[in-house]
Length: 249
Image (cartoon, rainbow, N blue to C red; front, side, top):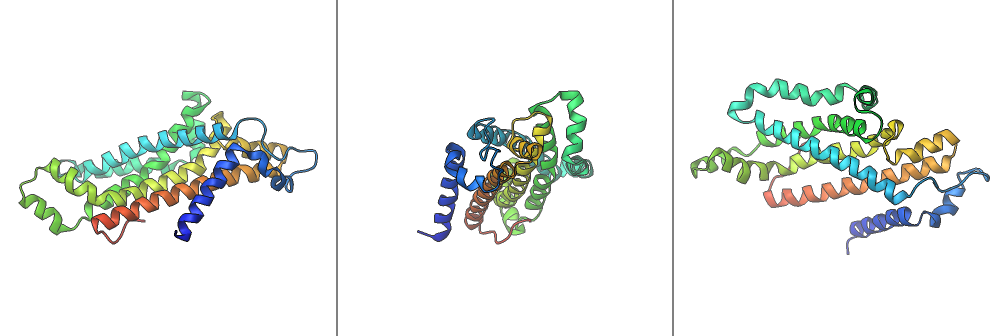
């Protein structure tokens, strides 16, 4: 068994135990808390909070992927080339405004809770997905696309059977980047009432409890590393299958 796989399994097991039995780690966190302070976050179930956090990120990234990939496909078709500047402006919009600013603007319209956080993560995740879709579809091997035309494939057949499968590793790279960023950024959603792992960090800041800060940071960091690693493994497998040597950053 490869060392890398063993380390991944150990990291997954440690994270699951962290969420299911946080009391097992109380001795470690007690080193960072004052004697009169609780060492383990006790204002909610960690597994439930982590699941809600992941659900918010998954929903936002699904929406970002649908729009980002859709716009990338549109502007690489002959009839959609003229929409490239407009599509890029839409994708750049989320990066223009920091997530905190988007939350501040969205709360008056959507109220407190999950909705403003979804909007902020959705907008912030658009650009990497759109740009990687664009890069993946515009840097295909010319010989392959010409062969597909020579076989008499329609535009839809070329897109679904040739172009998207070849571009998929590059597209996934953009989704990976957006997802990891969203995992960390989602923590600020707790400032507007969303149930995210940020509530542990905020509780630590308000009570000056370093143990809470460390606990929230470790869980978010572990999730980000494991999800990043999972996406990277899928990308490598797809690149081996398609024979593509590179991918977009």
